[in-house]
Length: 149
Length: 463
Image (cartoon, rainbow over all chains, first blue to last red; front, side):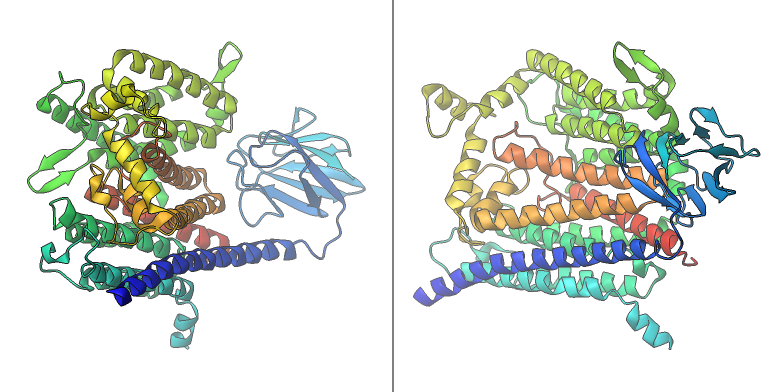
């Protein structure tokens, strides 16, 4: 009977050890997964010159105020993955806005978005781009950004 | 070439993650069989039916590996690879516990039945994965889900009135007994509600965020969008009032609050909902004796036993179950008494409502924390799938389903430990109960499908 007791004790301890080993295995797989995801998004940003930034002021439940986005000479903003800046907010259209840097000015073009693009609360009509200056508030959908150099 | 690419894209991660769960399950089954020989244990395999030995565990393992192979050779190989091993381990532990408890509570076929439900669940999970071509189908017919939910509610209400309404202290009427099958419609109801809410919130997301209706300092969505959601809330109340299932009402309300917040991002809606919840809670407390009793049980202090506690202990539907559960948990210690070596059957309803205490006694604190870890990882994976989704409906659906899972686990674990009043909702995958297993496997199937759709959209693979 003594040997059975010892054997059972070993089995019990082994159960717990294996359980924690499994948890560790899954956590390692998760962290590896996250690292891959972050390196793939970082590598997309290397190369083109950064001509300005959009800084989140508010209006989004997913983006914290102060989040900065780099602006390339031609930047598309929207929900889909093909955009330069991908915003996964539900009120942003697939392709929502385009920002183009021409003649030393930022031209803001609305891509027929559902919830509109606004510069300092003035609506940007889909056919008629408007110019935004550093310090202006650009509202895309319900998210407000400040354009900074 | 074809063979090489198939090998490269095989679900190796999932296979690798299956190794330890398979070891754990084989080990535990061996321990159960050995525990039979131990004169100290209360467990006896002699009363097990003809399915003995390692066969149940091997059956489960075979089905899980078969699902791995099936998925790897189908276009769905890109679906999430961590959910099934986690779920497989949990359901395996649940099945072992049902096998272990069955003979002791006079229902020796319980483990076998649980195994059959789990195997059916895996099959259903695969079916859901393959059939749900894209989420639009679920979303377009969301009124069908609402009707189905209402139908389930009506069925439960009929059952309630049939069993008898007048007895205010009787246990829950949530169960339907059709022949040998015990059916718990509320498990499928919660699924219908989440799909319905997700569809309504996704359709009207901009209206919900704008919040045009104002009541005092709070902003609410306009009445037309509010109505379907209020109807669903009314259903939660019905369950609370008539079917006498506290846990279900709590669960539905919790789902409502979390989905409203996820769908609109406005804390004011949540605040309003919470205020409403407390108001209704007070009303319910004042009206119903069984609610008062459940809350009174919360106040029982096991270390400073008083005579008031004595009467509560002996009362029908009183503190006996919880106190026995607490004793079981504490006698488990840190590494537990070992599977098959404790006395979990002393706790009433140990195999479904109080299975957490049964596990606590036999696996100990370390085992319980491990189980918490498994649940947390499943919940993490669910929310991760939600974050990676690109369209609002999938996002809301995935996060809603994960929230059900999380809230349900929270409610029943807290109930077992005397933090919240004890309710009758089952612990996902671990509690004995066919409807619960099937509904939860369907949830996993939907989550896996959403994760596959995410990979499709992100990497632009042709389907």
